[in-house]
Length: 153
Image 1 (cartoon, rainbow, N blue to C red):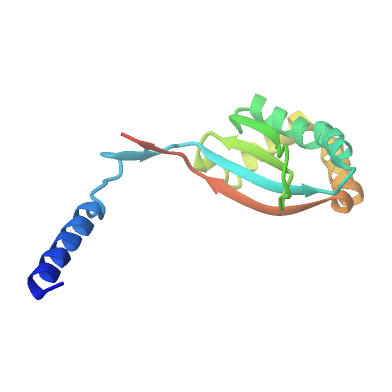
Image 2 (cartoon, rainbow, N blue to C red):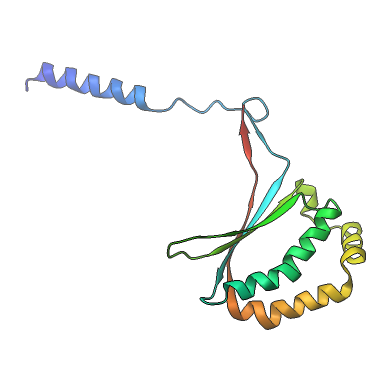
């Protein structure tokens, strides 16, 4: 290849790369995208082999029951349990709680007292005992993440 052919080839390559590269980001919050008010808490859990149903049974009377009370009080929007159907993973269960807003994540004596009145101190104590005596022996919390959906306009 002579110098002119190399120069032309280099110019074509540079132009192709320039066209392929994304433009500088010009997205503006609330104009081009909007973060959701909702906040999702996602907890990744690794349940020991042979203990999946035992853990689910326990969750039904503790985690699910407490979240249902919070949902009835409007403190959470929704909650769910997801299983990981296959594969060798670091987690095999995902617990999800959807909060209506960031405000609902922070501490609040008023919300706590309303929850305590609705759920009961005895249920809280029973759930804490279950966590200490059962859950901590059959599962490991791998991570907890807070997520906020981004809606592009």
